[in-house]
Length: 119
Image (tube, rainbow, N blue to C red):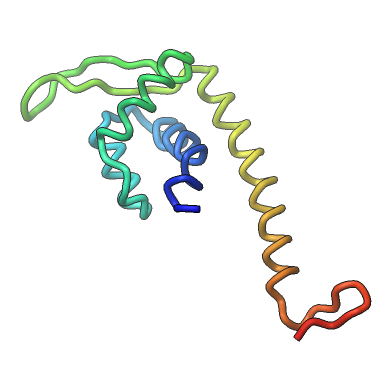
């Protein structure tokens, strides 16, 4: 499984988290994701996600003047978006704990599993 496939559902939650802190525009989101290590996400990948989030009423957008070039579309969370972010954080925490439990148990060469010791 590629990392892109694994990230498919996770990136929405990350975008909501970034947008929660302040209004941001698409290119800025791509830069912030890159700063966190998500190098494979470009504006072209992010805009369709933002459009879907807008249709789902998780974010709103506003055109604002730019110091360089045309107006930029800034995104902000709605109340529904804030609730979705809270839900994502809860789901992520549970998933993270579950995966870590499996990995910790199944990859520890010193643990006793059932009636046998794995070396």
